[in-house]
Structure formats: structure tokens, C-alpha cells
Image 1 (cartoon, rainbow, N blue to C red):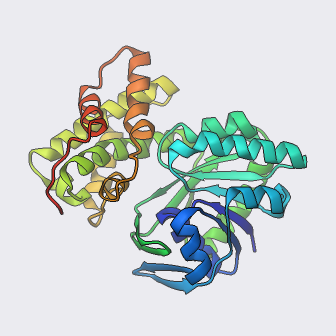
Image 2 (image 1 turned 90 degrees about the vertical axis):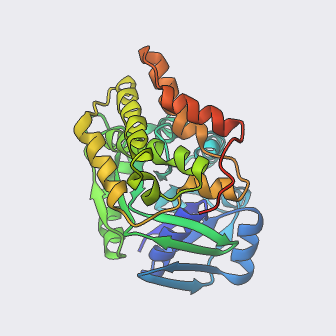
Image 3 (image 1 turned 90 degrees about the horizontal axis):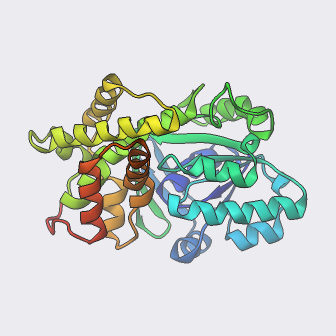
Length: 322
């Protein structure tokens, strides 16, 4: 049994938290606003083809976590929040760790390639596990109610890769985490180079998320369209080039593989489209912005990404629904 604080109880945090709680692990969900209120009053409901979860859950907010608990009360902290919140959360965790004189392992399950570096600078790289959830689509139907599809594989590894990772809480926990999460029915894959895997996922996210938010189309419709599909590949190629700024080499075979993954997957509403539909801020900086910043540092253009980010920042998108 693991003691886990799930920081973020949206689609990803709620889905994996429900799977782990059902398997007997001790979960504390960190949430706020309407989601926190619903979890306290009605519990958590998760609907997935292989999981029907409707149970009470323990819930608090970040202030409650830091005031009422110590880092060593948990084997693992999981970050499942939007990338825009990472810097603030990292600072809160840094103060909490320092105040209690304790540290514990932290796993990021977030979009983008900038979350783990932010956490490593604040908490120490030896505490950080990089991770990504792939082949999973989740969204909040209403506060406290989540729908999810897909096998939900988790790929993870010590930051930034096995060769450069320091000995510490993250590496010590990793074998146990993989074994116990796997036993809970979560497909697990350990990576020797998690930074590379995060960039490979960004290839997918930058390829389909902005186009999905602009068109209102799901992932299958975008990738199967004879005119839009090639644009997806162009955006993916721009991302692969940008990865070189972080010392990550991705080639055309990687782009083709990532395109095939999303092309063959069941239709998914991207997270950026769901955020747009609910009037929430889009993860533009963490997805498109990361590509543009790295491209600029390399002195190369990423005109497709630049155009889509500009349109979305100005709120220019199709009014058509799916």
C-alpha cells in the first residue's frame, strides 16, 4: 500500500486516483473550488469502460496539505495540474519541505516539457520523477464526475534520465511504484530517458491540441482529414526540431510513430478543446510556447505553431460544435 497525495483532481488526477484507491492505496486528493466541494459532499465518480467508481474520497487544499501533514506522511506526491500552476506549486512544496525538514518523491503527470525542470530547481532533482499519461482521454463532466477512455498507460523515470539522475527519494521509490501501480491495473513503462519521452508526447500535443481547439474537432477527425492531417504532421515536425534545444534528438521516424499513435487511437477530445469549451485558460505556453521558445533559441522557425498560438491567444476559433 502506498500513501499518495494527488495534487489536482481533474480528469487525469481523478482517474488515476480512483484506480489506486480502488486497489487499496491511501489517497488524499488536493483540490479547490467546485471540484473540492463536490468531492467532499458527494465523493468521486469516474466512468471508464473498465472502471465504474463512485466512492467517498479524502480531500483538502494546498493550505490544508501543508498545515496538517508532513512530506513523510506520503510515499509520493503526484502533480496532475495544468502546467501554468507548476511554478507556484513548486514554491509551496519547497517551503513545506524546508519548514518540516523533510522531503519525499514527486511525480509529474502533466502536459509539457517544463514541469520537471521547475520542480527539480525548487525541490532537488533527486526528488523528481518525470511522467506522462498516454493513450488516455479524460474530462470533467461536472464537478466530482469524470469520464475517461483509453488504456491510460503511464511512462515514467528519474529526472532527467537514468544516466544523469541523482540517488534519492525518486530512484528509491521507483521499483515499488511501478510494481504497485501495475498491480492496480495501470499499464506501466519505465523509461531510461524520460525527458525524451516527454518531448515525444509534446509532438502529439502540439500536433493536435491547438488544431482541435480551433476547429472543435476530435483527434480522429483531425488526423483522418486529408487536408488537416498533413498540418498535424507539420506541427509535429516543428516540435521534433525544437526538441534539439534540450539535447533531445527526434527524427522523422519519431514523428511518424507519434502520428500513427494518435491516428489509430479512439476519438479523443483534447484537453485544450475541453478547456476552450468550458471557458478555462488554454495550456498554450506549456505546449505551443515551449516549441516556440526552443525554436527561437535554435534560430529556426515554427510558423505553423506560431500561427495557431496567435489565433488561440486572440480567441479566434470555429463556432462549430463536434
